[in-house]
Length: 200
Image (cartoon, rainbow, N blue to C red; front, top):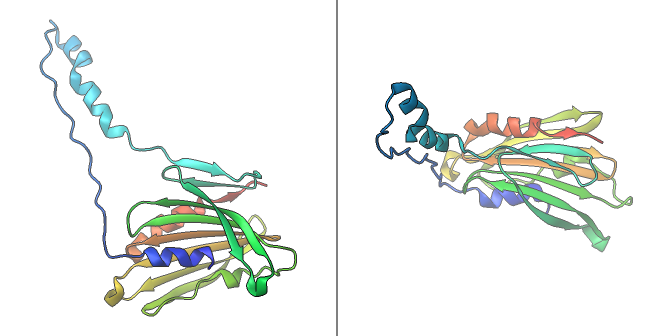
């Protein structure tokens, strides 16, 4: 139902490996001096291909209320979360970047009606069999209260891990989620979470 549960369905036991393209050599230079040869060598251009990794992308909330850094431009999609008892829905936006079948990072921003009492603890997902929480603790950022959680699957279930950090600001809920291959991905999850800032 709610976004933090969605990444759990994507936790698999496959890791995609990334590799760099080798640099080539186009041949020798016919220039007369060593200095000129070094300056005009085709290798100078080839070496540039090793530094073309995508630049991190900082997204800004449509209301100017937050910024968050992703490794690349995230996929943006609308959210509509039905409320219990047919009492309307929470509307918002999801931003997701998937690195491979195990690793993804997501921000879900949802606006709830005034009739709903916001409780960040309710955003902590129910875990399936074989997974357990290793941490749930209160957090605060720029005066907004929140909660952080960490969970992991047993080795028999693949050993995948999930981290979440949730903030409430009035009737708006900000949910940061990171899934990883194992608990060793915690530094990357914390770096993603820590790049989130309130600006409004």
